[in-house]
Structure formats: structure tokens, C-alpha cells
Image 1 (spheres, rainbow, N blue to C red):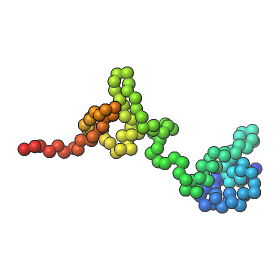
Image 2: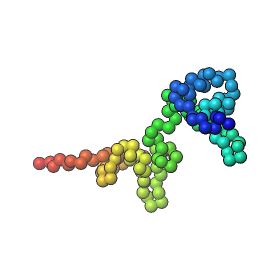
Image 3: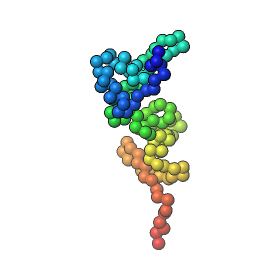
Image 4: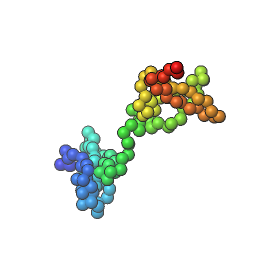
Length: 128
């Protein structure tokens, strides 16, 4: 099978090929664009998800904006809960997104059903 060694098309080349093959079923189009794998037994598996992702990327639709995941495949929820010991933990996904560094300090202001964290500047001015 000569298609087995082809590379996956991307960008404008992919969009052009998809347009040329618009008369074919989508599985066949994906296969002809290089989005398939062959098992040891010779069975061909079409990778439609990768194909669709590549088509969307070629059209300029970002699926996974950089920094939206914490490296483990989960997206941040922007919610925290109070632990049994009374602590609230803000994860590194959020502190990295805010550009915070180890040692940054905050002033805690309590409101009715909310908490405000106000970052304290590194320089403290003395009142004379």
C-alpha cells in the first residue's frame, strides 16, 4: 500500500486536498490526506480526530490555546474548595497564568461571601 508511507498534510495543502476530494466520503478523504495508521495485521485505521483537528487548525480555529491545560490534560475550572484542615489551595495553573513567583505576598480582605487577594508590591513605603 503506497499510502502507508505518505505524510499527513497540513495547512493550505490539506485544505486544497480536502477541496479536491470533496466528492469522497470523509474517511476516504482523511486516509488520502495521510491520516491513518496500519496495524501489524495490515488493518488500516483512519484517524478522523487528528484529521478534523488538522482541518480546523488549517482554517485558523485553535482547539487548545496554549496555557489552557495544566500538563495533565485537564482544563482549569477556576474553582477551589476548602479542605478539611481549613486551607484553600490555589494551583500552579492559576499562579503561572497570573505570572506569580514564589515569595509573592498578598493581603487578604474578607467580604460577605467572598475573599479578595490584593498583591503587595515588593517595596513598602515608610510613613514619616
